[in-house]
Image 1 (cartoon, rainbow, N blue to C red):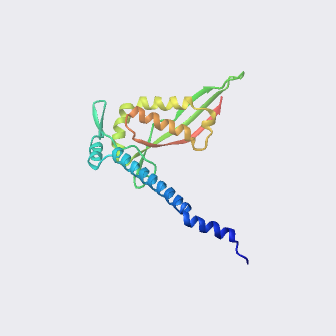
Image 2: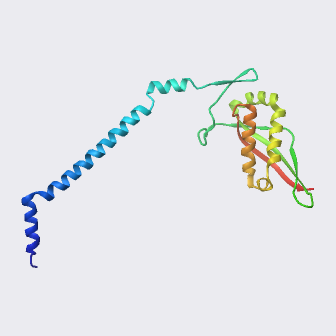
Image 3: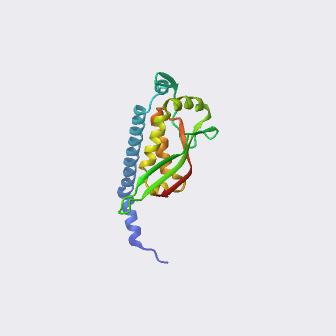
Length: 196
């Protein structure tokens, strides 16, 4: 194999002048300095944004641990986080008699859809007695809120497997009436839609 003398001459010339070897080094140096500046800027920003250990304790100690509802002091537990309380046990609390709502179906026939369902709520065992006390005080308002949700539900929502949309709305409304998020889930049993 024959050597290419032209390449050897260009390589030797670049070694003599030193031009090619300094360009990549200075370019790398500039990139390295920019990266260091970015890291320092991020560290400084985090230093000022993140709370110090003493500040975190002060923030947590100022969170409310109780709430006054109807003149009664009720301890507040933190809102449920999915998967956070796998060891907690729940108590099923029925809301009383079955709920029946009727809607007039639009159209020339004026058919009436009747929807009947039994609603049961799940409450943490540790909150069961507090829930019972509040439920007795607000039973009428809770039943009215559930009837309003059922009345506003559509045929599609009533035909969903497990009534997921209706159950979420019922849970939200009951907790709003209670003023404390005691209800963790809702069970709808025996749902039946009839056309009259």
